[in-house]
Image (tube, rainbow, N blue to C red):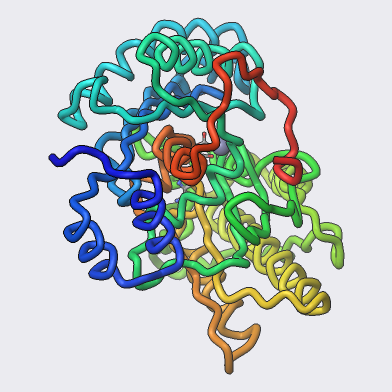
Length: 394
Ligand code: KG4
Ligand code: ZN
């Protein structure tokens, strides 16, 4: 590969892609200048996934290693900080080695090193931070600390085909085991949290309801098992029992609540005769999934209405996180956007399946550092973590 040319050339390649220029334009430019893309090694360990990835300024994910710890925390009913820290320490060296091997590059081909600076669990963040800073200092490479939620919000600019790139301002609906969040992205660095959950995340609610209904999920996970269970049909003359639809919590308010929905399911179960019949279980699963979808659609509509009142026109909505792989939710969201304004279609984007399920990953961290590397805006090797850090304050 030809050597790197000036920062300006590299910037041009990236910004052209971000603005939605046809890929051919970027290619022509690169061929003409002989530029090779800027290559970043990213680290992420803010919660319970140990991640390392190599990403280039021409939107190539050369590797994306995610070492999950889920099984270690299951018995605690949430992330146990010291267990997570130990596992990150154990797994990070192997993850970095694998990320370089899978990218087929040496550490000397890396142009910059990025890590999650916050928010997250302090001890967990420090594993990535120490690894990234030490490596950057030893190799004399530039370093950038990234905001974890900014990285989630900018992921579609990495994964969406160039022709369909979301245009600022766009909405990001992040629905996973760790987050239930509606964000407005106005530029690479300016974001507003429009809604977050007042209690549990949507993913945890799917997991708990799947457990309460006694589903078995094998390797596909409880949320996916619940979705599949909802598709089951009862054979024979038996009818599904009627279940009063669960209401949308906090109507008119831009906030989610999934603990209340989960409690409604628990209450229903406690009122039914044990053991629950299969038809009862299917009816409850469907009532839950329908209510979860209605809540997302209602809050999304409310956000669009409120933004319109402030003259903010959104043309793209990006949905990501493990729960975004749910086909029922996807269909309801599409219907909602089609119904919102039939004359001006709002595009709905989903990341590719591998990034939907590996919601937390280092590819997004590496990618979100790119505009700063290309602008020559680096962090000092002494940069400090920010375990608490609002995305509105980047
Ligand atoms: O983003 P993710 O893979 O990881 C973390 O947040 O850690 O999200 C995992 C969550 C779990 O709660 C899982 O049950 C849920 O996403 N999930 C689903 C589906 N697939 C995964 N929930 C509903 N329907 C699905 N098809
Ligand atoms: Zn995350």
